[in-house]
Amino acid sequence: MEQFVTAAGHRLNTLLLGKVTSDQPTLVFVHGGLDCIGMWRSFPEQLHRATGYPCLVYDRWGHGKSEALTLPRDGDPREDEAGQPLADLFDYFGIDKVVLIGHSFGGAISLIAAGLHDSRIVGVVSIVPQLIFHNASRDGLKAAVAAYDNGKLRDKLIPFHGDKTDTLFRNWSGMADRPTTPTKPYEQYLQAVQCPVLAIFGELDNYGYHPNLEFVKENVHSELGILEINDAAHYPHLETPKVVITSISEFLGTQCQSI
Image (cartoon, rainbow, N blue to C red; front, side, top):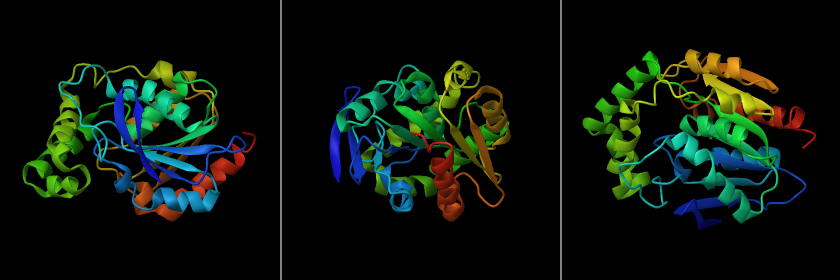
């Protein structure tokens, strides 16, 4: 069921699959920088069926059907969205046990959130997390800007974000120019993570993956599983869904079995 919820002062669109209960975790999906609920496609429903766990999917501020962004946007969106917005969503839906399923920027937000929040976050699946800015990610960003300028990427995004599309893209592409973006130290958040983590990477990722993979390995000191998929790029959950769903199901059944 879709409904609007106010989180951190913004009206966010949410979709709940199943019923939240106290005896099992809820999987909370945190999408990437240009994405929204609809761009997960059937992945949340597939994971809901495979695991039996309730799933909460939401449009981050400025995305999909949620409230439009106000620019200029101050602060670091990854840090900001890892804090109060998630806490408010957990409170609204009465979620006591959370496994975050984050992709790209959402993968970074999920890891940061696990270092910020209390014991409610009991596991993290971080898919191609974008934690640090490096040469390959810079090249990927330039290619995305070119695709947007020639209309191809913009045409793909408009059906999902409507009249918010240009503002959303300007905010996303402009983050590379912010002084904090290339060197922002997220180490303290990752080192504070206490729950199990599964990090998934596509070896064909056009934004690169090795620097972020090494960053995760160096800084996450809790139970850490790494999955590198040789025939996946930036959307492993859409490109190789069976592999990803099987891996997440096994992660939930082993590393998170005591929650």
